[in-house]
Length: 350
Image 1 (cartoon, rainbow, N blue to C red):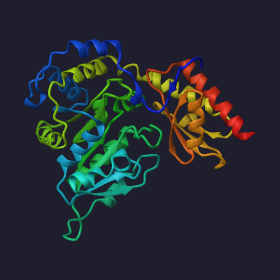
Image 2 (image 1 turned 90 degrees about the horizontal axis):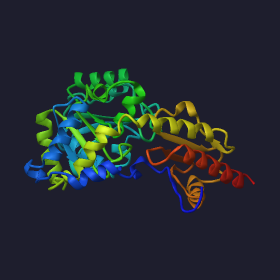
Image 3 (image 1 turned 45 degrees about the horizontal axis):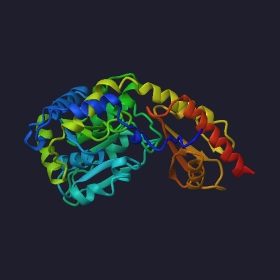
Image 4 (image 1 turned 60 degrees about the vertical axis):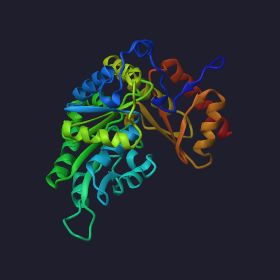
């Protein structure tokens, strides 16, 4: 690393918009989206819905708002929602389900983010006046806190079948659904096929500056628009943002494989660093989970030392670090990051 160059592996949310995105934003034809009059937003929503195989979609400012709007639309106050214990909706969204929708979370501990259909079946409440009504199952693919792990297609199908047999709706947090689809070798629409709603982010590896899409049936999306409005997500001339989202969907999906290859390269390099535990075979998409071999140093202290050398990372736990590849890091950056880890762990070991 030279000069002030930084290697930012904190998240794929740090990606900068491409020159094509900036041009599209400057030239976007816009209108008032709350009135449904922004043609660029309308084009983005139609394309987003088509790519995940749904009737309709609505542009949201963020993935968290999209997830919370979905929960609000699917449930009634006092209902129960089933989620994996480390899911983003449960772990990282500030208890929004309880605060905004007045619903209760029932969590299931998964195997690296994957919950068993039998566990969901057991968790669904019977019809009993003493119990909350189970109204929604939330799934996540890829699974963030498990290191970008994949939920296989057959498991997705089985989970949806269990829910639907009991009259329970299914929402898919597909923030990185295109990463999952590429790694699993199926279209994104296949992963979302049995979900009643699906969210995906434009502002992660697809590199748009802002925005997420919530998709589902036309009737569901009409109600979700009301949820977006009450949450403060009604935007006006939002075509300046949607224009970047269109470029993201049209040009950035097919390049995600490069992020996956760089993540594997990073994992393979870190596998040989004394004091770190990394399993390259577990790296399926663009996230690398790193554990410290002993508790002699904390993840936060290692992250601080990395930052001093120009490598940015996030501590995901007391002794775990999360690294995420994206379009704004290249092979040389990955090799430099590995070198930085070697130097820091050698210093700690001494």
